[in-house]
Length: 362
Image (cartoon, rainbow, N blue to C red; front, side, top):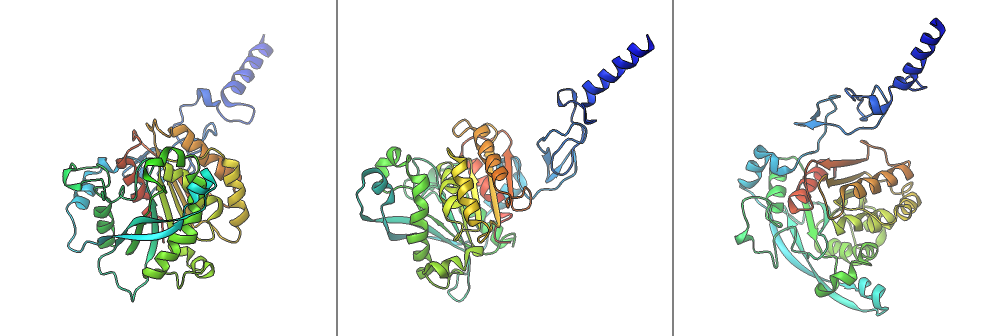
């Protein structure tokens, strides 16, 4: 009888703690985890519970907002109050090969495209500035981020309509010395505005060619960046001062163009509410370049209520790529932020831009 009771006790212990001495995750309350968000009782990977920059479970700190920027009234009051020394926005026109059209039809031609450029207050040709390329999502245009073109800023509400606080955020972060003065350029994904549905099928893998062959050379020739010239060698030499961020389809592009074959030019990458259909191709591309051209930081994020890209797909893409690229180390040069209860909106993309700027160009 005693032997039977002892055996039952052993079986119960194995059920609760598993063969390796850990509690079965199904029975664990996950009351504590380490700084990597691994439960100290059962070994399951969890999510941090961040509040005011600190995890309430393990005490880990974060530079990122894990809730929408809209929830931070103190920050947004400062941002929307304006600054005494705001930057300026100007429109540029540059020529590029129409890579999307060529991929769809085989026709090779050169077209004119437009972009907006944010110049920080006090911009001077005698100084050098970090450069951020900032992309919009499907069906939008180069005007998305700065409420330009078809976006009438006079009709926008207090918070978070299309593009209405990007400039405010940049002005605030620069004037409060949270980031260095930075040039931001916002091109468009598309070659023909009324053809975006067709171009969506090719643009995420094509845009990197335009960025490296045409847009970056234009910026090198016309603005005071760390690029000493517009040759490939001169632009590559400045990669520690060049970043890319994209929302939605721009997030897909960040994975399928920038991470895949543009690492010689970009060392900071932000993919907001994006994913990839082919993580293996992205992994292959990164591993082919990363030894010579390290990723200084890859910031990725998605709203937990995103029904357009789907939060689970975005997080899975990120995890697959990190798993396949040994040089990408969580919390060292890459992070994925789950923005609580956020959807596929400008509010979410602005939160992601704020987060990315906390770790870019450091």
